[in-house]
Image 1 (spheres, rainbow over the protein chains, first blue to last red):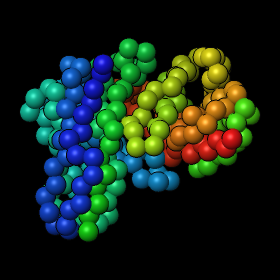
Image 2 (cartoon, each protein chain N blue to C red):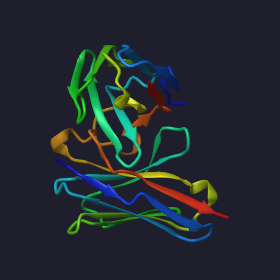
Image 3 (tube, chains in turn green, brown):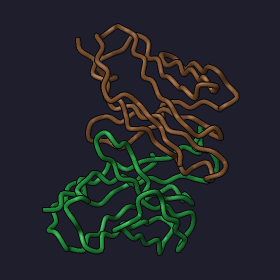
Length: 116
Length: 113
């Protein structure tokens, strides 16, 4: 069974803290993604990675960085958390090509982050 | 940039048909998708349609694409309470490597008994 695992489901952090969100996939996928989900705004792409140590900015990269040292692991880093980063964060992975049939994008269950 | 719009809420009774609508702006969209998100879960792919198709049917799901108006719809026949979820449409195109999906705002479907 395919798996994208996000290590923390619920986190509460203080303003200014450094926050790490971890994601692991067991499908040997090339691509990995971090999205942010907010009510009324849908999913917005923060960063994606198409290979180890490769990364590309998405639509809302400001305030975030990422790390992909191993193929199976993609980390999202909030260098200095702020209250406007309170959100649900979704990790996803996929093989190459269009997201259809066997190339489906698989999502983790999400990490709810509250910054106080 | 690309923009994908959906209405936020839809409420139907069990057994009725549901129609969820989506509009997009990118004329080079090649694949259009419908994803379902159940409470507390990630997204799962329901169905997709290639841009040279007008319609695709998959059991209770019917996808209609009007490429001229850039309008996509998802019809769920005989809607069940288990269909209550958030439904996202999304698009991709070769210019952004296909898998860099642009998602809509999501439509929350509530099915009442």
